[in-house]
Length: 192
Image (cartoon, rainbow, N blue to C red):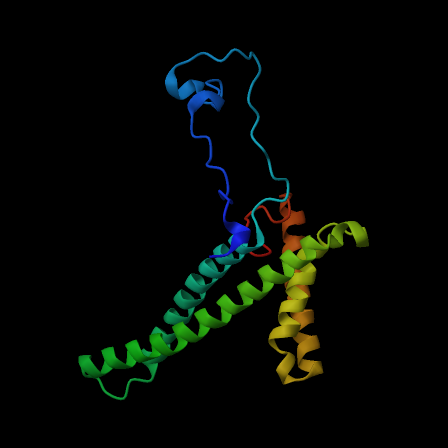
């Protein structure tokens, strides 16, 4: 037995008595009237949702929309390329097309959404709006970096073109919002 810990009683037990509970904090639940005549204010986060919550929401919706659009395209391709007029062969061809194009489109668009959300969160974290003096630079940065990163293995020219396309998509969306008189990003999905 070690002599160093012989008389050590360990950490004190927590005080679980009710004397530290103020009834004012749970007054509405118990029907007790509060002694304060001022309202309780909720903490408000000016930044909005966190990066991970935004990423999951964007990725889920993008995957669903991509899978649906790819499935519709696959349906059309499956009907057009059916080698026979028999129902079972047509059904098999349609299901194969929907599975092929739907999953491919959903996965691609879902990856775009995850990458965009992460780059936008990175831009918010480093406060690009404040450092550059340009409002709305974060979505443009996110879209440009998403396109460039996704197509980076294809070469610098292709990555630059993809980044430019992403930047153009955000610019077109921004111009559309200005033309409609709506605040930019009011839909809350990706850069829409």
